[in-house]
Amino acid sequence: MKQFEVVIVGGGPAGISTALFLAHQRPDLTDRIAVLEKAKYPREKFCAGGVGARADKLLKSIDVTVEVPSVPFHGIAFRCGEGQLIGREPDIGRVVRRKQFDHELARQARARGVSILEGCALGAFWRTHDGFELETSEGRLRARVLVGADGVGSVVRKRLGFVATRYLAQALELDTEHVDGDLPRDLILFDVTRRELPGYYWDFPTLVDGREMMCRGVYLLKKGGEPSPVDIQAVLADELAARGLKLRDYRQKRFAERGFEPHRAISDDRVLLVGEAAGIDPVSGEGIAQAIQYGATAGEYLGQRLASGELGFEDWPVAVRASSVGRDLRVRTAGVDLFYGPRRPTIERFVLRHPEFLQVGMRHFGGKRWGTETVLRAARGAIWHTTKALLGADDVERS
Image 1: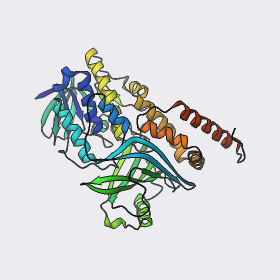
Image 2 (image 1 turned 45 degrees about the horizontal axis):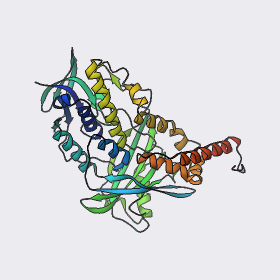
Image 3 (image 1 turned 90 degrees about the horizontal axis):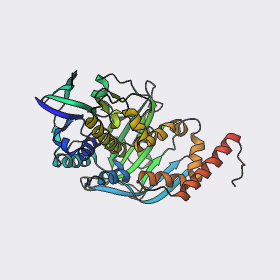
Image 4 (image 1 turned 90 degrees about the vertical axis):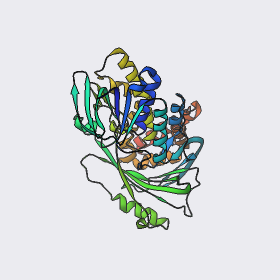
């Protein structure tokens, strides 16, 4: 029976990044780290494919560069019922195909000595006196520590009895040719025009087998147990029709996402969750960059805990909340009711009137310093707009 120090269930960005950063932190453990991936690379993964440049910068800090075909973007278009704002900022991200991105990331982990067990599905697993024993489709394994990086439908999460999360999202996407009226290929579009939709429509430029295409989709956020307020397939059909396209002409890809909740349990004795198994941004559904940030945080944390022998992992939620990804997720989770609640029209007007707010968001997405002047302008705008909303006045003068 194979014995490993750490077994990571899930070979997506969160799982592979955890392995890479742990191997960087503790090179002596590299050959005792295993990643279980139930499929075989390259495997398809439904995802819009937007990667914030902050993720690439983080990987580069451990000399990992994921060179795959991609479409760089240098701005974001925000569209709502009251207008459109286009923000420009160089080199803030790129759009990739997960089939290629995940494969290359796993290849680099394997090249560094991490065991990548492809076509290896997790079956039953149970605790032992010194860790876990796992039954897999490729045989039985032992692990001192277990990491659940197996996505929204996490087997690890379910079988260990972690509480269900409040926010779940649905997404439906497809790839089409370009049409007249599409924005330039160096922009990604978020369209929140439909206020009955707690979410948005998106257009991302993409490459499909070398062809310049558009990934178009709809993201819908809902609270667990609540019915969907709209039919996302009907919404996507309407958006396509407005562009002269027909839904039935394209292959539809549907997937789910789990929103982060700051005070939900994401660890237990000798086991912790990362990436979407733990929870990602509920407002936008951004996942790839946050998965890599989770992996960086987990790699450092596990390296320290394995060295000290403190494997209760009671403080993993604290470590996440204190990390850059945790701070980001706490802010975004707190913004759910602002973006998708009764104040939504006010927020939309604020974004249109204060482009510096979008500028801060783009710089954050790209892993850049926000800039003191830009932050101050955004803060002044937020204070002014909040005062106006609280007073209920339409004629408050900006100072």
